[in-house]
Image (cartoon, rainbow, N blue to C red; front, side, top):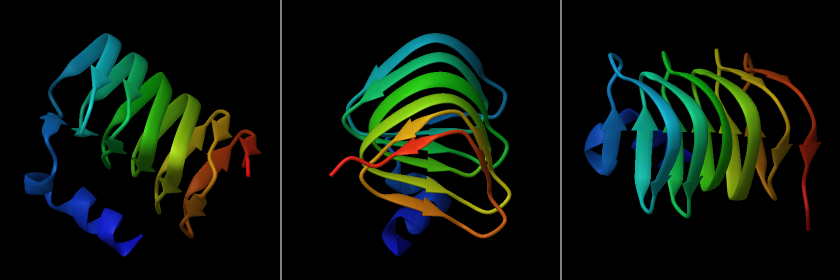
Length: 116
C-alpha cells in the first residue's frame, strides 16, 4: 500500500496524466498507468493502474488491475488486484475486488463484492 501511495504523489512514475483543465467523455483504454486530475465520464478499461486524483471528478464504468481514489468517483469498478479509497475521497457505486483498502475519513456508498 505504501508503494501505491508513493506513485500517487510522484507523477513522474505515471505513464499518462489527464490534467485538471481537461474534461474527457467516452471510452478510455490503456495498458500501464493513468492519473486523472480533471473530469472523466464514460468507460475505462486497462490491465494497469488508474489513479483518481484529489480534485478529479469521475463518473464511469471502470475495469482495471488497481484503482486508487483520492477524489470523487461514481460508477461501477471492477479491479483484479486492489481498490484503494483514500482520506477525503468520495466513492459512490458498486465495486468488485479481491482486496480493498479504505482509509479513515473516506466516504464509500455502495456495495462491495470480494471474490476469492
